[in-house]
Amino acid sequence: YTRAFEGVSELLAAIKELGLKTAIVTNKYDAAARNLKDIFFRSVDAIVGARDGIRPKPAPDGVETALAALGVDRADAVYVGDGETDMKTAKNCSMPAVAVTWGFRPREVLEAFEPEFIIDKPGELLPALRAAGLIA
Image (cartoon, rainbow, N blue to C red; front, side, top):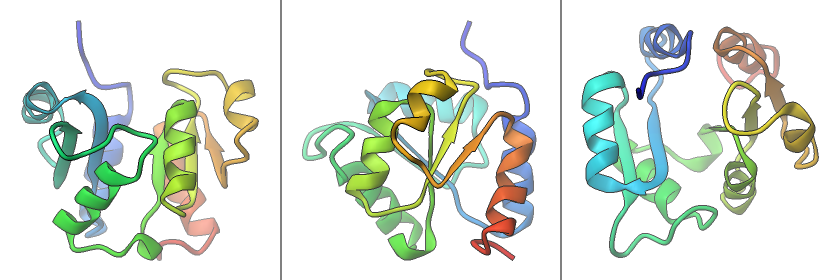
């Protein structure tokens, strides 16, 4: 029953059109995560799942591995997530956090972590980042 949330595929396509890079960092087993990427998220540039040598989120290891694979500095990145572990990961990586309400936790839980942004639909991500001057 696995599927991408409504609007996520379109968001990823829009990100790709802008020439921005994307990565998925997950605590799911690495081989399973790569399989899901191949099925649902082909346009994503890098994926880092649970594997030896990478501590699970909220440790920064997976994000650091993804950034290195992308050739991107953390100062030029944002972290998008749907739960407490994601908000803690963003903080541990010193990255702006974008909390999304369509996933694992409701807005009230996410607000407690004081993310830079909270969005309710995938289509709100790029406008929020533009308004903040994080992308052109």
